Amino acid sequence: MVPQYGIQMILRINILNNSKYFIHTNEKRLHCMHENHAIQTLLLSRIEKLAQSFHYDFLYEVAQQKTLCQILLRDDNGSIVATPLSFHMLINEVAGKGELIFYHEHGEFHRQKFDIYTEDSIVKLLLFIQERLQVNQ
Image (cartoon, rainbow, N blue to C red; front, side, top):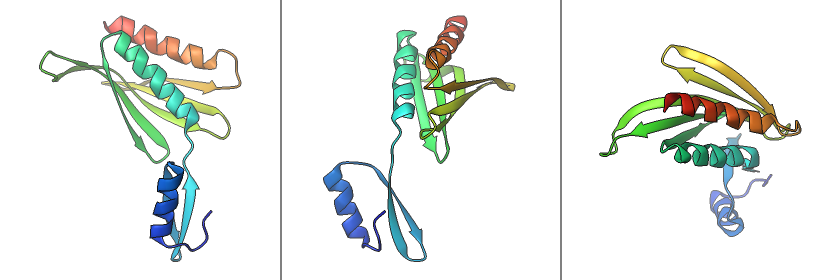
C-alpha cells in the first residue's frame, strides 16, 4: 500500500513499474493494490488459441469479480453470425481455484470448477470447451 501519496506520485510509480494498479480512495487516502491475474491470463490465452483453432473469435470483458467471455462466429464481413459459447469466469487467484459458468440461449447449462493444484483440472476444463466447439461446428 502507498500511504497518502498524491495521485501524480501513484501514476509515476505505475509507469515506472510498468504494472497495472487499482487506485482506491478511502477517507481521502489513496491506496495502490497490485493487480495479479496469472491464472486468468493463462486461461484466457489458452481459450483464445482453442477458439482460433476452430476459426472462431474470442472476446472477453473483465468486470469486478468475474470475466464475461464469448466465443463468436463471424461472416466474411465481420458481422457476428453466432455465439457458440458464452461463459463467466470466476477466479480466486490466491487460492488457485475458480469456476466457469456456461450459458446458452435458455440460460445456464453447465458449471465447471477447477483447481490449479489438481493434476488435470485445467485440462478437463479446456477439453469441455473443445468438445462444445466441435459440436457447434
